[in-house]
Image 1 (cartoon, one colour):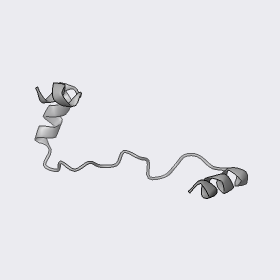
Image 2: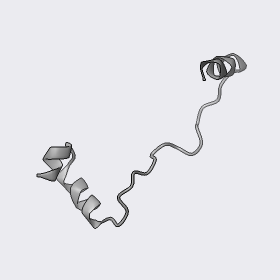
Image 3: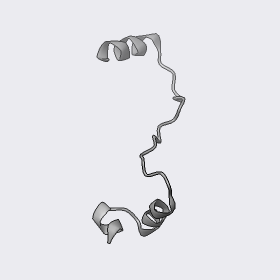
Length: 48
């Protein structure tokens, strides 16, 4: 019932139930695997 409610697979619900920590953890890589050209870097800084 929980899997259906939250739109996840049943094994995911079991994994959640076994866990002790229920906070979301980031899945973002700690280091980006891309490099920017100087022109791209200027654009990115301006957009921030």
